[in-house]
Image (tube, rainbow, N blue to C red):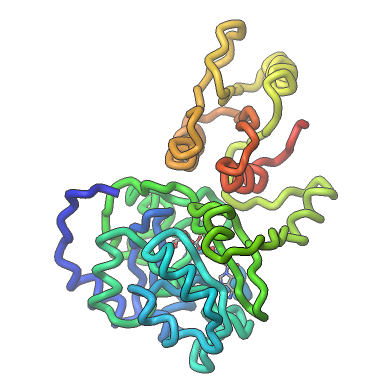
Length: 327
Ligand code: TXA
Ligand code: MG
């Protein structure tokens, strides 16, 4: 996030949002496709524009902790502890919803996801707006999340999305960490910008990592979840496994590109070196996948990044983006 950023005039964005229209908003994680969370017709436009199934809940973005009780009820102390520690920032809390929160936002569940994003433009927008903004990532359902305003522009027509607030490149680069506090038990639903260890240290207890049953099953049957995916098939694996595939595919006349952790001079395939540092990797991964998608390769061959807690969110996204895992 640029520190010297000047806040643009937000009146057009506020007018559009109040009129029930969509606005593209920068956050520190990825860009969001925002609508007034209190207008079900406006929220419905998000689902149409994204081609997203109606029963998928969307996160409500708020200016800060003072607004938690506008959207949630029976809020446990742990929610306040986490919000104090990490808001504004890349953490989404799942809490019991207030009765007025519409089914279009919650996907018909009795819970709501809440987050106060840290980007100065969107923070100021939320402050002036006063209410909540329902916003999923601003991409077509299943596609790579956008980390620049230009990425968002490529995802929607100008009829669907009249205004995108340009806040520069997202400095976290992967989506927020999602923690559910429903029923008094803290569960990590999605790893992200804030580490599990940081959350556990605030709560003073270990938290469960809830794995996504549906996608685990799909993976077993070989039919991978197509989330966060580039249009070009992506294979994830060890360098040895990828070099074997590269040779086969090239022999069959296919154009492949290798995305490796280290420059490898012993092969003659087009190569892209991935960052060794997980923070930089997260910042760049989605933009890299989008760029390579435009280069008309037949196959993207991505070396599995290192293991370790700080790579957790990256592994989570790559596992979902890949068509196949080779090891
Ligand atoms: O960083 C982020 O979280 C970005 C930026 C724009 O804030 N947003 C984002 O939204 O990633 P989206 O819709 O692409 O992903 C939101 C995730 C979904 O997996 C959804 O199922 C989950 O949040 N979610 C939202 N509300 C929920 C709820 N009430 N219960 C369980 N999961 C929920
Ligand atoms: Mg998304």
